[in-house]
Image 1 (cartoon, rainbow, N blue to C red):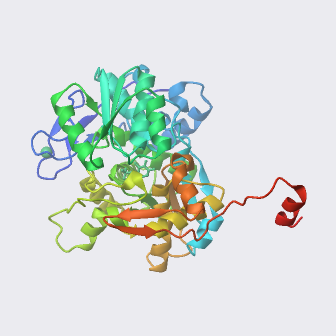
Image 2: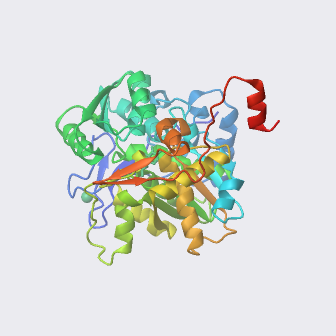
Image 3: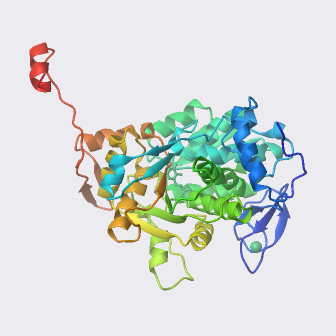
Length: 445
Ligand SMILES: *Cc1c(COP(=O)(O)O)cnc(C)c1O
Ligand SMILES: [Zn+2]
C-alpha cells in the first residue's frame, strides 16, 4: 500500500490577515506569539492528483494496516503533518455511517434528510477524530502529559487516547455539570479528573494558563492539530457521497472547533480538486449559549460578545466564550453559511424524533434537526434540498436527559426560573402486574 513518505511541508500559520506569521510545527504553540491570533496547520500539498487520491483512499479500506483502517488516517495525504506513521495513535476512529432519516425529514418538512453519525466513534463522539491527531502530535513533540478542559466528551476522548499513547492525562471539568456517561469514561480510561468550581469557560482559561506555564500539552480545539483530524468528518462524508457535495451541511455549535475544522476541510478539498463546490454550512446553537448567533445578527462586527452565563441542558454546547469563533466566521464566509439558534423544547423534541428513526443521539446533536426545521420554515432551506446533518454524540452519553424527557420530568433551570420541558413525543413506560391476562389486555393482543 503506498504511503506518504515525503517530508512534511506543514507549518503553523496565524489566521489573522494582518499577520500571517508562520512557525515550525515542532514549536509547542497554541496561538500566534506575535498577535495572539489562532493558528492553522498549513501545507504545501503534493501536486493534486485528485483521482489517484480517491482511489488510494478507497483501496485502504481493505488494508489490514491500523493507519489505513482509521477513518482519519486513511485520508492522510490531506493532513500530511506526520513524517513517520509509527507515531500515529489510533483507535480506529471515524468510519462512521450516514443514515437516511425519513421520520426526522418529515418532522422538518423535508423530502429527505441524512445524518452522519459521529456518535458511532470509539468513545461515542466526534472528539475521537480530533484526538487521534492531537495525541499523535503530542507524541511527536515528546509530551509526557496532556490536558484539556471539557464539558465531557473531550475529556472522555482525550483520556482514551492518552491511555493508548501511554501518557498521563489530566482533565478539567466544571463540577456537577457533566453527564454521567461522559464522566464515567474519563475515570475508566485512567485520566486524572479535576473538578473545577466554575463553568467550562473558567476551566478553559485555567488550563490554557497551565499549558503556557507547565509541561502539560493542551488538547482543546484551540490546538490546531485537533482540527486536522476533525476535517476528516467532511472528507469521509464526501467520500461516502461519491465526492458530490450536498446542498447543506448542518452542525451544532459550541466551542466552534468542529465548524472551523469542517470549513477548513471543505475549502482544502475544493482547492485540491476533490470536489467542485462547497455545501452551505449551517451552525446551530442553543438559545442560552448562542454568542455566534448574536454576533451574526448584530450590526457591529468588531466585537464578539461572550455569554457570561451560558445555559442549556445540551451540556456539550454549554459554552459562552467559544475559542474558535474567528475560524468559524471564516468557514461561514467560505461556504455562504448561516447560524440559527433553538430553544430547549425544540432540542428535546428533535432528539426524540431522531430516536424514532432508530438512530438516537445526545442533546447537543439534536440541535441540528431543530435548527433545520426552523430554517425550512423560514424558507432558508428548501424542502427538496440535499442535506447532511452531523450527529456529534451517542445517545448513551446522557441517559438521564432521555429518561427525564420520556417521563415528563425534564426541567431547565435558568437563573432563578424553572422551565418545564414538555415530553411532546414522550414514550412513557407502563407498569403492570406480573399477570399474563393483564398484559394481554394492555397490549390488546
Ligand atoms: C464537543 C461537542 C459539540 C460542540 O462542538 P464544538 O466543536 O465545540 O462546536 C457538540 N456536540 C457534541 C456531542 C460534542 O461532544
Ligand atoms: Zn499573528
